[in-house]
Length: 194
Ligand SMILES: Nc1ncnc2c1ncn2[C@@H]1O[C@H](COP(=O)(O)OP(=O)(O)OP(=O)(O)O)[C@@H](O)[C@H]1O
Ligand SMILES: [Mg+2]
Image 1: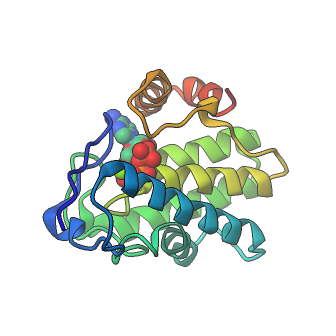
Image 2 (image 1 turned 90 degrees about the horizontal axis):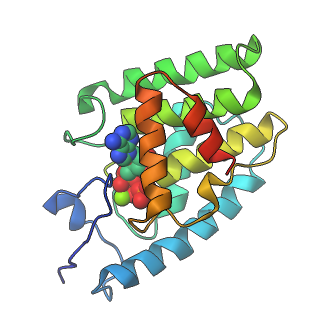
């Protein structure tokens, strides 16, 4: 069955072979897919918050994606194998991710920035790498939450509204990511705590 997917601005469209990896056979609409994904994500978040292991390694990034999307997409937990409009060259995902994880561990060890800023910088670089075919935004927001919680702060609120719809909140989020591209981290930090 083919599902017509409607993407909000700043969402990465899927390749046909990535679409073919949809696990539940009964899904016919975007609304049903969103609902199914959301159930899967809630389970994944519960799993994530029970973990006590180290999170700043490649294995955990993949495992978390698998837990969030593993009942939805066959390729959950696997890195992209093609280029997208956002993200690094797919062949460089592993190296770029390792640099990010190493840098973040260093920043924590040396308290290079306040905890919120370390987590927000991590979020920005992780979505810029865009390791997975889909689910990068949700994965990277949860990763930033887990990270900031481990640094002793409450999780972020990310605009306090659903980012799935193409509303004002999503516009503010994308604009804040673009400011971060231009090295201004303030809007993204403000957004994450709004
Ligand atoms: N112009 C942009 N500059 C930087 N990052 C962007 C831009 N547009 C989108 N992004 C990031 O990419 C994410 C979308 O990627 P993807 O579709 O893989 O994630 P998702 O979890 O399915 O999306 P969603 O944000 O709808 O939950 C956005 O959430 C945002 O983090
Ligand atoms: Mg998406």
